[in-house]
Image (cartoon, rainbow, N blue to C red):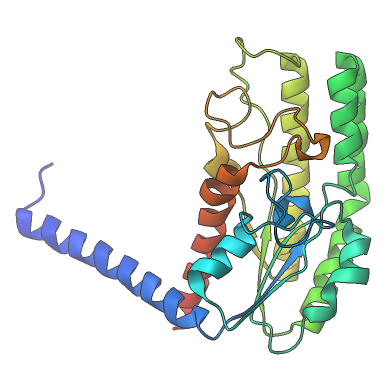
Length: 272
């Protein structure tokens, strides 16, 4: 059915107006925002190729937290995320910058607790069956032990930053599954690794919801840009080896950053 031109024009104007309101609210809110970025290598910027902010924790100006801060000019920005971090590391080493004045927190955490790096090593070097077994072990940990660990971290964040909008981001699929022309690991391994990401992300999402935090799922944003897609936003096996299976600079700029920015903009609009 063809709508009258006036109706279409009005609808377009409303859409543009709503987007303008969201953008304006986000910009105004950022000027008074005290932002703290927590988490592991997926937040610090491992894989971007430049650790200009902190080499020990592999913090990069190309990582999504630093890029968001650079474009929004918050009142303050503390970059506490560190490569290799587990939930215990966040509790022990990263929460010192949180306070009642903290207004925005981002975090990726849980992959190292579930043994992500050892699973990847097994899948790269061993058989399909060994890979699937390692994945199943990690999924069992994610189901049975990770929820409690995440609950402790999220409760501590809320206790130390009671007024903050907390955005919990997850992990992308590593491979496209339409991978017939892909060289390297088998289709069986690709499917197993993606299923591990799904399991991990489901657990993270539930824990975030239980804490009253905002869950930001990046899998849709990375769709079509996984390994073997021909337009990868993730590193495959590369040197230095620690960069492997982490987002590239493009993965942060075009994958994580838009998802995070969208969640912060909507929150700002809702408060305005």
